[in-house]
Length: 77
Image 1 (tube, rainbow, N blue to C red):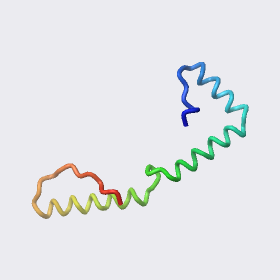
Image 2: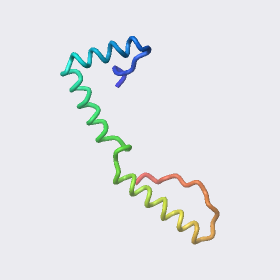
Image 3: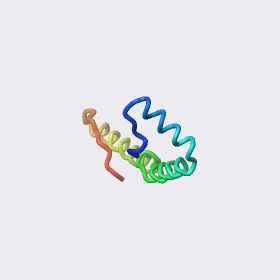
Image 4: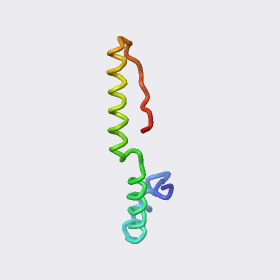
């Protein structure tokens, strides 16, 4: 979405005005953002929950085995 990045306040204001006066362009950008969001791991709550549950299970297993706490990285489920 490089077309939404500006280098200074004047360029930002210009971009905001263009988007405000070009509803088709704004709609196209919104549609792309929605599609990207649907494919983003950030919004994949089911995967997040699986990974979180797996981390909890690994922490409990370490605790039961008498192991010291350690940094655990999630396995991609």
